[in-house]
Image (tube, rainbow, N blue to C red):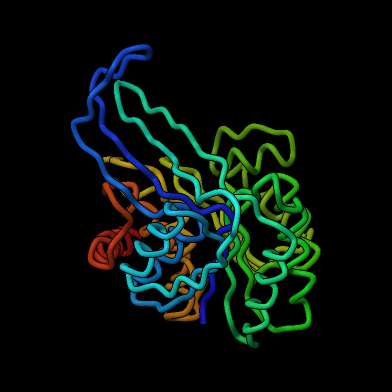
Length: 304
């Protein structure tokens, strides 16, 4: 079974407001509401690709009820923990001449709520996959990723971590199956800036030496790099297409990588599937569908 964890999921309220101007009444031309959060994005793309999974996380208030309903409407098991105080956040994304965002705070998650999460993690068995992705709310211990990996260290799990800076570096000692920083996040860890795709490889290998089994570096329009557990390094240009919405592209890459790996056990196939799934989401208003990924994968593999 595949499990994802999103500590601070949201309702993403996306509005198109041509000519948006601060200090004035603006009217929307189009509105959409989606369940949001990095782990939830991974869950939805995995489901689109045909892989059943369970989404773990916290929810509260009427916004949390709607969030849970939308996730379940996608056919995903939303095994969320109800929080008594506050409400699940609403993240407003304003698309005008430029894009702006207003992100909510989220509910007041207490120690008792965190203990309930650990109880749910007790369900995990050898061979399961756990994806932990995104930021950690201020009300939670900033060591929670590391704490969970330590708690589950005696089980034969494949754990994926998509986080930044210390959140990512601190888990490496527990040997995550996959980490996926982008090139900017990789540069922040080591205090460097990259100009060429090949420049990220030595630093990805450093993360591998620090404990990660597979290091997947996304570079938006410049492609991607995988430093794999089997010793191989895979590089790819980004598939050609028009970027419509980059939100969730990195999460889609993680989902695609897992789907490709589960399908064939090949890191090369997993890498190709990850790259194409991330791009398919970027080329669409919504997250990638299986048909969109297969279409991109067909032309991508032929080119490769």
